Image (cartoon, rainbow, N blue to C red; front, side, top):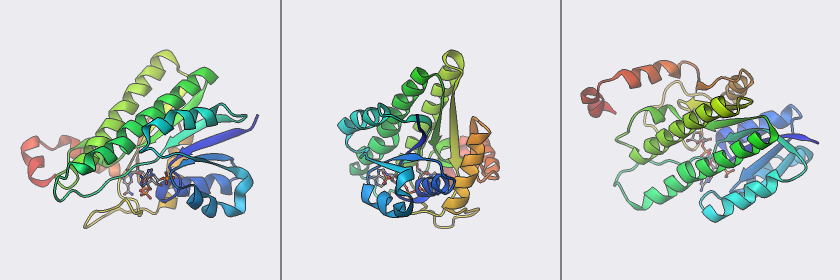
Length: 240
Ligand SMILES: NC(=O)c1ccc[n+]([C@@H]2O[C@H](COP(=O)([O-])OP(=O)(O)OC[C@H]3O[C@@H](n4cnc5c(N)ncnc54)[C@H](OP(=O)(O)O)[C@@H]3O)[C@@H](O)[C@H]2O)c1
């Protein structure tokens, strides 16, 4: 049985770099994507190592059948990265933005995480990896929805990790908190400590190999994480 790494959200940015890293190391991947043409184009030279499964996280009824169908195939998935995410600056607090963000970042991640968690439990082992953000730690005046959705992801992954520790210790859960990564997602005015998606991907692989529970990319973002968590509310509300 072929072992494969699953990547949910692999057409661009960090997900694309993760796909590239694996195929460059001859590791077969199964990529769940809302842009299958782009993934096929990106991986043209290594088609035999890449299985592409169309999956639009904004179509809630599609998620379960699409993932379960792929997981019932011949291959054994040993790791699943859930990378997909959207986020925008919110100038107008437009209610129309809410459902898109929640469907991908919250509903989409939760459904995918549950399906992979159950799959790993049934197989007796596996590693689930979610990409959250340093933004998950506090609210944001510029992007309240994005930070709230990332906080949801962080807490959900923590809950799943506790669950696996207590009931299924052979299943691991890792949460990756990137700072700024140079992708379409990065929308800050003055980004700092920016890393390329390729560097982020290689750091993520090292973190996962080491089976860390929670880690920052790059590592020094841990300092910002500690600072964010320690700032009192009265001060944070003026700068956050
Ligand atoms: N860049 C940063 O500074 C940064 C910082 C902290 C956290 N993150 C997190 O890292 C993850 C990857 O983001 P990225 O930086 O690599 O940005 P990106 O290039 O914009 O990638 C976002 C991914 O989300 C997936 N996606 C699913 N549905 C989508 C939709 N309707 N519209 C657009 N994309 C959709 C896409 O994969 P498919 O097309 O394959 O479905 C796409 O590859 C996200 O969860 C993000 O929140 C990024």
